Length: 98
Image (tube, rainbow, N blue to C red; front, side, top):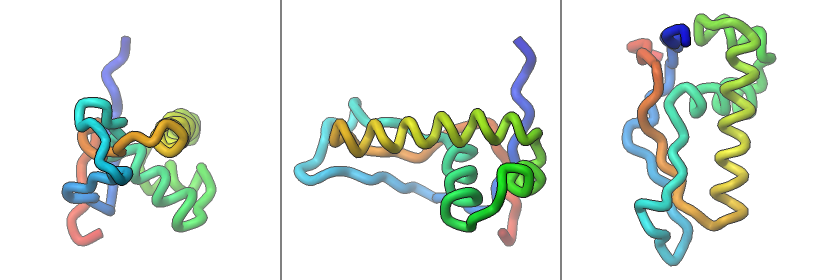
């Protein structure tokens, strides 16, 4: 398996944790990686195309397609199953001043 290429993100989510009320079990939290968070931000919040997002993240468009697909599945799972959503980790570098 090839090593993952670093994805560049401008928006650092710091420590973000979304929990349903009443609070869910922390060990059942669904983890959204920083690159998945960035893909959601660029595509769904900023309205960029996958090609534009790929340029921002410095990866191929097909990589963005896989990242956003995974992110949307995790977000849907958290909403449907009423689970916490935690943003952390991933193969990323945060661009300062973004």
